[in-house]
View 1 (cartoon, helix red, strand yellow):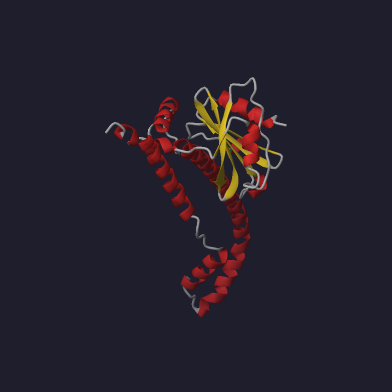
View 2 (cartoon, rainbow, N blue to C red):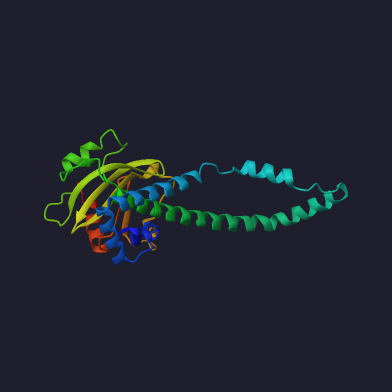
Length: 254
């Protein structure tokens, strides 16, 4: 079939592992091919469902401790006193080691969370492009799109004036990032679609550092910042310059 060559690279495309020229070609094909767009949407939804399922149960520290105690071998009575002395002597060294381990573990968790956020934002962008109905409110007028979100998300935001710019507003939709509701706006510049996501900063699971949020492994350009208690993400296959210009328009929005 005509699309077999495209579908063989679909997973690589969704993981953001294609080069920039091939990614742009793939974007154009997915937007124009109902079969490939439906397949891409199904795979992204499956990926997100698997990620959500993996987080449903995390053992607590108390649960882990009880399990370890239940399987630990019982020491003979004659050795207990010596064991207690050795344990007390080792405790001083253990405290220092645990402190270092905790700091390293926390740092690793922060990095993993930032990678997760970048991946989720990229998935939401690709999922929207692959959808047959990418926006719920279709309008180029910011005064139509902004009021549509009232009552649907727990915050308000401003949209920039696009007059005398190369950007055009296509519309918007509701979205979720780790169960946090937000706004997803779609802009167009020279036939490239750019997604702008807006979430309430305090509703996100952890504080993000925009300097460390860089989609190095993705074929997209992205910028993120915090302003007025809101977290903004701007992502797309347009040039880094276009992403930066649209970001500046949002930062300067009244």
